Length: 326
Image (tube, rainbow, N blue to C red; front, side, top):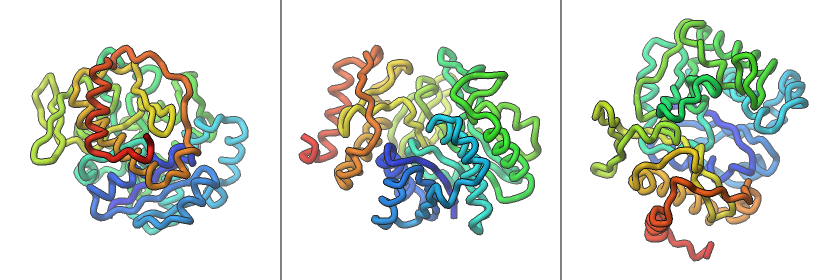
């Protein structure tokens, strides 16, 4: 049994459900603890039953230290502040051997068990950004990404986790200051600061907009694989982090022009299945689509040609009936 936790509010409900659906598809035994960051999100999960989910409200979760921090943070900064506390809450309140925090905008293409198996006798596992050189933000955003962070329920892991929580409560803001940035830069020295911290090696754990340029993507027998360009190493894609996807309405989306998309297979095999899943969720639960977060500004997409947009939408329309939306 794999144990995960995540946090989101009603603005990200469809993304959280898409992530959950992808886990159901690829992970036969798991439990997901969802920290609902507003009443709409919490009430949604009270109304609809989902297997393998436990929902925790803010009233249950927040303690005095978090509430004090909340008073001087933005919503995004507060979510970052709470990441470590959600993991600790699960370890403290439920009889679990471990807990892995996962971002709500991850989408799984194969079982994460292969990632967990890597940890061996270590107690904590963190994932690198693995930046493509021209997007290297290590100095500002950190070497590691708080996207898939594993902690065993033991003293060694708790030492790391409690230090991280205390650090985030003291300082966790959306700015670079004295070597810190959000909850993320704190991870930079964990491998030397603490015992039992392991850096994930599997390239399929952490494919993202800032590193996807390094890989070619293919499908074989229904499974998605990446091929590292510089080494020709093949690996199964476990999850993709959809950080750069912005929705402007329930059906209108753009991909950030900051990160180059250098292959149509990225659209076909990565973005298309995710967008289809989002649209399916929004069609099934149409009332939540109107409550989600949309950006009214549509930036110029320097790396997305008209032909590529026709390509991705053709994949979507063939695979999904969109009569509800159009």
